[in-house]
Each structure stands twice: as structure tokens, then as C-alpha cells.
Image (cartoon, rainbow, N blue to C red; front, side, top):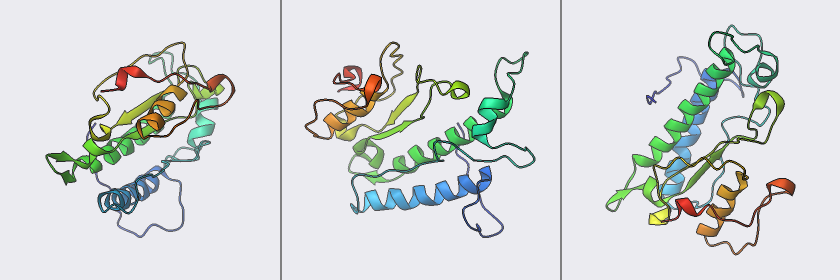
Amino acid sequence: MANTQVILTEPIAGLGVEADVVRARHQMMTDLMVMAVACDQTRVFNMNYSSPQSNVSKAGYEKPHHTTTHEEAVDAALGYQVNCSWFTRRAMESWAYYVNAFSKVKEGDGTLLDNVLIYALTDTGYARFHTLDGMCAMTAGRAGGKVKSGLHIKAEGTTAARVGYTMQRIMGLDINSWGARSNNTSKELGEILA
């Protein structure tokens, strides 16, 4: 993904939900977060691109992201929901900006990204029906060498909570399990451990 920077010609007014405003705000918050981590002002952080029921909007399109996931028809020729894909690409571009921002800060022989572990996820597998099957979870960083990077693990038949559980164990939390109900786990995702 190309790393793009949004330059607004007008100040951001309020908490707008149009995709370009969300991206610009996310980039500003990313830059602040990276500086806070680099300056050791925080070691644990949480950042959202959008709320779980995303109301991010697209200029000239009448429905926000969440509504689109439920109501947009699948394009028969393409095999997917065109506008949903557009919204997803905007979120992934912001994820790429976020990860790249950590990689630009030099630390020792590496970068800040080498010394952090970032966890990104969505709250559904197939948004149209709010399924929990096939949920995507991503990590970036190497946690100071504790984690392997560059892997794609297709962990079918298991919960995405294993990623969060594993990360907490890597960070030294003494927990026996993590998650709720069918998404509770006490099994690490050993494939990512260095």
C-alpha cells in the first residue's frame, strides 16, 4: 500500500465522519502517539480508526460504512461489495500509515516498530451478518525480538482472541485465559513467538 499524506486546505471542524477527515485526524493522532511512545510517555496505548459500528462516510455516497455492509448488494461480476471495499481500503491505508510511522523512528540498531507490538483487529468476520468466524487480526512490530514478523497464519477453527491472549503473555501479564464465551482462550498462538 502506498503511504499517502492528507493535507487539508481548511481546518478540521468538529468530529466529522467523512473518510478524508477521519484519515487526517487518524494521521494526526498517529503522529502524536508515535511521539508519546518514542519519548516514553506511554507504553500501552489504544487507538481506533472508527467506532465498531463505523459511521465513516464517503463523499457523494448516501450510506455510512456500517449501513453499507448490510445493505449493499454484492456486485455479481466482481464478487464483492464495491463500496464496502472502498471503505475497507481507507481503513487499511490508515493502518499502513500507522505502522509506517513507528518504523520511521530510529531506536538503537533498529526502529521503534522493532520494539513495540501493535495489535489490530476488526469486530466481525463477515460484517454483513456480524459473524465471528474468519475474524482478521494483525500484528506489527517485534516486541523487542519476542515476536516473528512477516507471517500470515490462517488459524481456522480457532478464535482470534488467541492473538490478544498471546500478546498479553508476551508483555508479561500473568493471565490464565482471555476473551468471553466462545471467544475465550488459554492457548497461545505459538507460531508468532520468536
